[in-house]
Length: 218
Image (cartoon, rainbow, N blue to C red):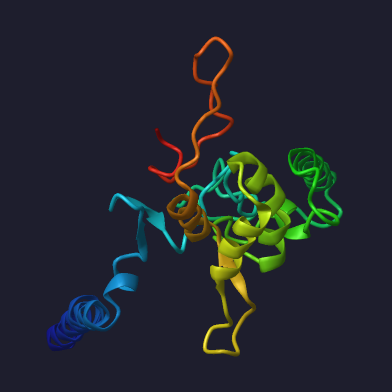
């Protein structure tokens, strides 16, 4: 009996060391050498060298001068600690009401946009943290962004096209645009968006702050 327990304990210790210590250390070491940027979380920096987020996690942008990602049902929205979908089915009235309200808001904010609101701009991803948009959804937002920044829409469209990512390995997935990287590219090209000023001279209250520090901060 004792010898059996000793053998079992030895096997347990060896397994724990191999799979709980040595293997994770080896995988981490290899990742740090071969893919250091990805292993550190694919962190993104702005023009000042400040970390403003991860290229893998969506952030909320509500100002007209920035491209908006898909809606998020993660926590209170874009919460990286609470990745989740809404779990609302296609027959859900709550989902329909939210989508209709979002579509009306988007059309009101972007009256010069061509065609209907892309479906992905009113539907959350399964994780609630998908940072990507289709090129079509990004192009749809160009008139609003150009108007808010006071630049030619063709120049904003050129930034969008320059940030379209192709299929992974040429065959996997679809072409896409990372909203955070696109907004950073906008700031590099045209400067950071500033708040409008009231006639009294006081700065207007933010329409909505991005969780990416540096993009919309004065």
